[in-house]
Length: 434
Ligand SMILES: Cc1cc2nc3c(=O)[nH]c(=O)nc-3n(C[C@H](O)[C@H](O)[C@H](O)COP(=O)(O)OP(=O)(O)OC[C@H]3O[C@@H](n4cnc5c(N)ncnc54)[C@H](O)[C@@H]3O)c2cc1C
Image (cartoon, rainbow, N blue to C red; front, side, top):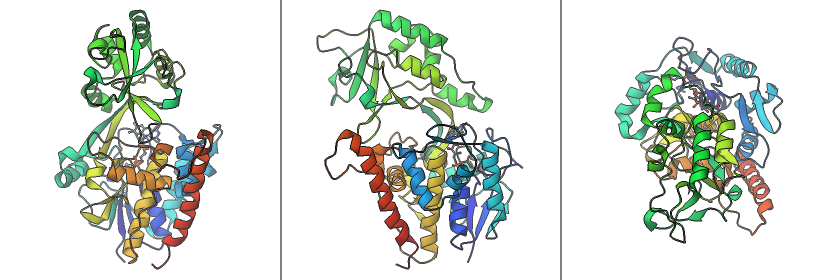
């Protein structure tokens, strides 16, 4: 059998290589480091974590915790190595980053069915293949990708605003309205008077920022963070994301400034702060967001961030197994496919590998069930709106609603239990002959 080509020995590429090899499918894995480094990686280890050493929550009350539990059912390489190199971090799964990467590296290198090629891939590989070259894919490969999928399907930066939990917003203070009452009242507006705005502006101007890396300057120029807008003058925000015009309250009074919240997930359990992309430190983001009327108790589930992040417009290009709609034996996995985060990237490598394995062994294709976190994530990536597509991480909002009536506190345990039992059944059927 011809080997499967995998480009990139990161989180997604290593998981995919391992899942294929353990099913007796030979793999040729290309990795350009250490010969050619990315701007963020520091070593030649496979699966190096480029930033935080946390793989985030590890309980069934967290979306990413459910994702991990599902991956354990597949004996995931990444989750297994993380467990071996775990460091104390409360309910999160954090790792000794060097020990973790060295472990993945060793296991992949020692596998007899995985051939390693230490080289940069500059052309699109022949199928069967998985392209898992990550958010910092080399320029030559990007150029090749561009030639096939077109410029408009590639995005180059991640300028994310903080995302907060809807149930942490004080709806007695905020009001629903769209600007000039156009369309439906889809935005929840947090009104500010002049005194509050001035205090907010002062705090924002003084708040500490995360340092900008050299390679991030282009990103920064193309998408202005709020603290930079504030630096340009006290009124700049009032003509930008905090513009109050057309957002008069019920009594017809116009607030001095307004922060708009927009629904961020299908279930309306999350909101993002419109136009609030930022590179403030996480502690500063928390403090600043809580100065906004109605958000005094806001719980941030995803902090704002700005860094280079290449990803494709997956809903245009990929199906729910991360395969190209037009080339079923060629997949994109990892951050490049439009998932967000270490664990999500590894999970997409797993889904792509299982899909390829089934196709190469003549079995019918099977997308992962939508009731599982892995299936819900890949379904989201393949089918969500093509306009303004943004990378997504694991969360309960992606899962189909429970088919029984439940109290709020019963919801997450129910969804987690349903995801795991569905995955167990699916896992058993996937290696069969049907
Ligand atoms: C600056 C930055 C900070 C981040 N911080 C976090 C964080 O704190 N937490 C989090 O969960 N996620 C973070 N992310 C996202 C993170 O990159 C992903 O979660 C994860 O690493 C993606 O896994 P991956 O397998 O898709 O890509 P990677 O892990 O980056 O692996 C891709 C691999 O492909 C190789 N490669 C690239 N081009 C080629 C080529 N042409 N030929 C051969 N090899 C190639 C690279 O060297 C790399 O080893 C961050 C991303 C960036 C850019």
